[in-house]
Amino acid sequence: MPGNSEAATISPIQRSHEDLLAMQRTREAAQRLDDDARAVVCWLDAEFPGLVNSMEVQRHHGCEDNEIAHVEPRVTDRPRRHEARDAAEKALTALGWSIKPEGRDVRSTFHRPSQAQSSHARLADIARIRRAVKQANTTRSSYRPSTARQE
Image (cartoon, rainbow, N blue to C red; front, side, top):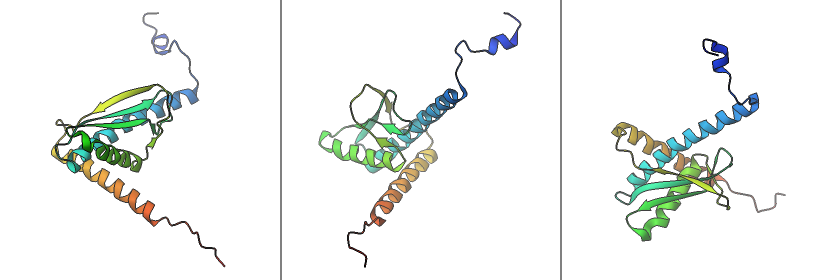
């Protein structure tokens, strides 16, 4: 009905409050992944100068918000591809992403070291990833399971 503002704001699909909250969390996770992937590809560019052209991040349809399926840096030197991929996986894991590669259909996003970003923003992204990787390495190395029997 023209002129009726209430009728114009009602969605033709009615969703529960819980569904709307879940949709919002998923949108926020997707935005966080975009931000994290951009930061990781900037970090890869700093760690492997001239090697990484872009990075593909795959996610399964219907995955949990913190899950990715696969990471594949596009590189100029194919023999070093695995080294760059291992570094990218380590960085994304340090940022809280879980890598779950088991087979289902995936969707891909592609990320490049952003030339549109300011140098300050690139340096901030690189520093953020370095801190996360360092902290993850420290946490892993400080965990020592006790194999000796306590008496």
